[in-house]
Image 1 (cartoon, rainbow, N blue to C red):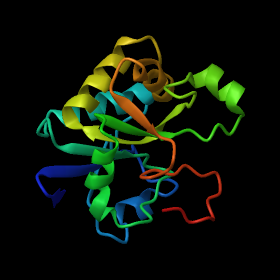
Image 2 (image 1 turned 90 degrees about the horizontal axis):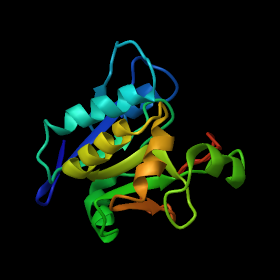
Image 3 (image 1 turned 90 degrees about the vertical axis):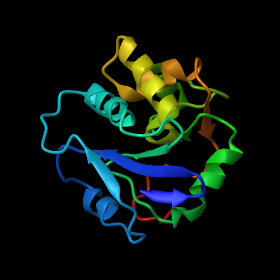
Length: 181
């Protein structure tokens, strides 16, 4: 937990086991403590993650900031010392990463939907106030889906969510060899 200014920032992932970049995320070079949800539990579907995140938000103050990072394919490449200021510049309750649309925009939009500005939100990296994240999770759980990214894009239009379309905080990359900030 980092204490920047007045809000506490909590870095969270969901992983039932170690795989991919999990160890590098947990043992990042900035010594950011990562709270791991779901460890050693049986994976059912992506709603497990949403349920665990929702439950975790009850342990936080409503105005604390929760930063969710996918446990298997996310790295912290830049010191997040100014992440709160970057988040506040979005003037939004939640900021999500932009999907790469690896399968093409048409297929991605058909499978996951569109959040805003004709962009698909990616559920692998996002941040927001704990109370807003809780509300987002509750709304995702209310719809009939087993995919968190589809759920995020469905509820996105109803909530104060902005996509980080200019990669200010989050960068999704298909090239695992290219270092991103």
